[in-house]
Amino acid sequence: MSLVLTRLVRETSTDWESLVHNYEQENRALLVPSENSAATLHRFNVRLSELFTRAHYDFARARRNKDAVERLVENVIKDYYNGPNELARKAAGIQYARCYPAPEEWHADTVDLFDLEDRFRYYFYSLESTIKTLAMKSEAKITNNSLLKLEKDLTG
Image (cartoon, rainbow, N blue to C red; front, side, top):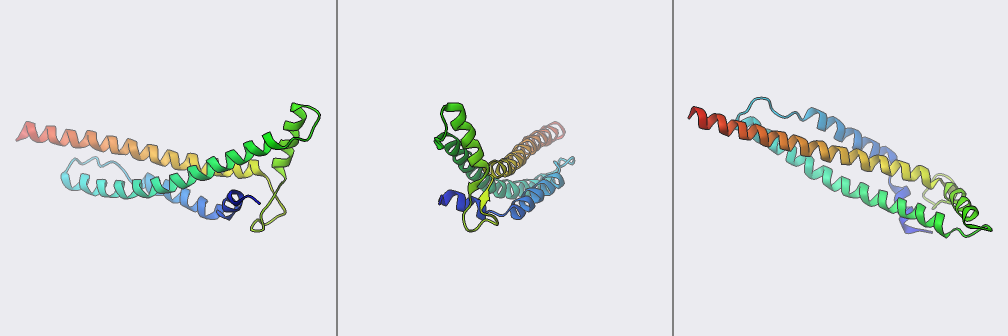
């Protein structure tokens, strides 16, 4: 039995769904300050940094899982040599991937690798969106900070 598949099925969808949801909520709540003061920008920087750090580590885990399940699907489709020609072998590989033998940790005898792949791609792309929007907020904060400095230079 594949240790990679065992690791993947141990990852609970409930935990991942909750993680993705929490990042979405925190990200939506983290607004770039419209008031350009040192205090508001500092508070924003601290919150942004904390969220960015956590998101990057979870994003790395999501990428590892996505890449692993994609390799597993690719290998199952390529390596299932049962059929008179290449198309028949590929079709057999696809059918095998849909009913792949599951590790003991799984709730059924077989696991649909395509469903597993879809699930981990969702987590990956959701966290990637979180990372990208946090980066955009960071850039907006830099712009605001530049405006604060410019305003200070003009009035001071």
